[in-house]
Structure formats: structure tokens, C-alpha cells
Length: 148
Image 1 (cartoon, rainbow, N blue to C red):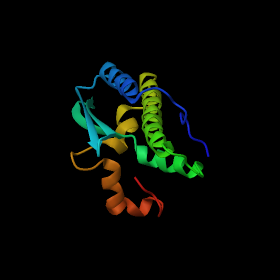
Image 2: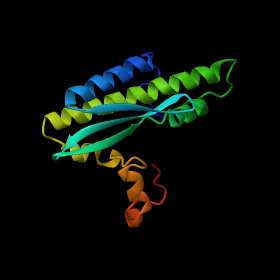
Image 3: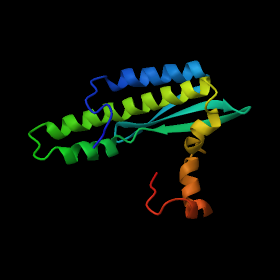
């Protein structure tokens, strides 16, 4: 298994502050945080793309990271599962920070357009473009086991 940042000790609030700074420097007009059961699961931000304000929802999916870390821990001791939960949050957000840094760098170098980088994450207030695409007629273009 390859899992980047699985030992990160950087607190989530510091990673989120870095992401917010990156987005602000890139021109984000607004940034919001989305929580589920007390865990930060995504950021929503507003960017102008091709002259139009667009909402983007950037998920971290700490539960998926937790599931991988949990599989690697054969016999957890007292407190280990709670530590894994905290680690999964740090890891998930660190991965998203690095992805965002790479995408913004590519945009700055004209290797990628903003729409190309964020298309799957465009959010209509209910679902992302990727989720909508997956649910519609384009489903035949996607692999059978494709999950958001």
C-alpha cells in the first residue's frame, strides 16, 4: 500500500489555513467548511472561471484514509483507533493540500486550465459535477466500479 502523508503530524487547522491561503491567493471569493459528525469533510469555495462565478467542493474523505489505516493495524491497543481517526483527518487534508498546490502550479504554468483542474468538483449546492455525471447517461463511459 502506498499512502502519502500517513505519518503527518501537521495539525488539521494549520493545513486548512494553508489551503485557505492558497485559494485566497488564487482569487477565491469565498471559502466555507463542511462538517459531518464533527469532522471536517470538505471545503467549498467560489472561483471565477471563464468569467463566471463557480462553486467548488473539495472533499478530503478522511473515512477512506481511516479504513486503509485500520486494515494495516492488525491488533489495536487501547486508544489506537482514536489515534488512527485523528491521523486519518491529518493525512486526508494534507493530501488535498498537496494536490491543490500541484493543480494551482500547473494552472500558473498554463499546463492546465482552471476548469480542467476543478471540473469534477464543481458543486451546484447539492452534488458535484462528477456525481451528477456518474448518475446520468454518461454512466456508460465510466468503469462499472467507479465510485465518487
